[in-house]
Length: 271
Ligand SMILES: [Zn+2]
Image (cartoon, rainbow, N blue to C red; front, side, top):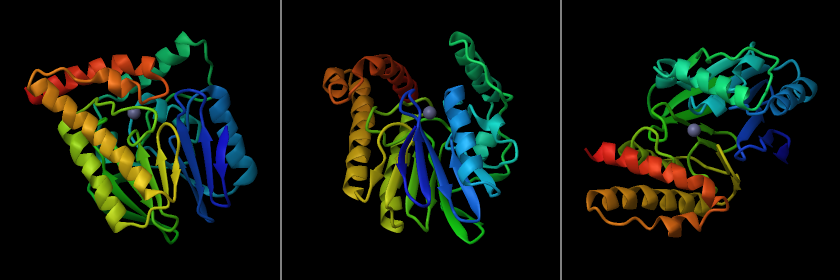
């Protein structure tokens, strides 16, 4: 499960959708981001924390409330939770929990811990809000678009940009909330690269990037083009070149259905 490790960072990746879990050991405390998916995988992460990073307080960061990202909250009952204000005030809490339940039922999965919606201890409500934990500075930007409650986080000392479900190399944007906000959020990537020294990009799914800001910009510009072109195609009743887009990704079949959902979402946005 471990796809990258150095003295401070451990990056775990699930077999499902190449979903990433970041563990950052700040010395005095741990920052654990979106621990996920399968029961054995989340137990592996829990055991890893207990074996190699024991005795440190855990801060759980949730990049957004999609069910795959909050699925292991109940396995870290002692952790303090960081998330956006909209995450805390979400009206979809019950729906997210229901999706976890359905997933586990469908796949005959048992979990050793309760399925709960995270209670937020540190609520983020605006861009550039900062949180200092034991001398470690975290800077946040709200990232609505994929969902309404997304959060970008920068770990300043190591230059880690935690993006949640944006900037993946495996998929074009999944627009569940708003294409307008999605575009606005992608523009924040420029601001982040200008105002912070970024060494790592950790997306929710797929390959992380190290020391390659040009690659981050390539992903951003590609995603921006997808959303902007989809908006203008729907506005002008033009044909969107979906086959060209699908051919850029390693798992195109799974993306087709998502594109159709995006079309509906963008049509709603433009109404
Ligand atoms: Zn998501």
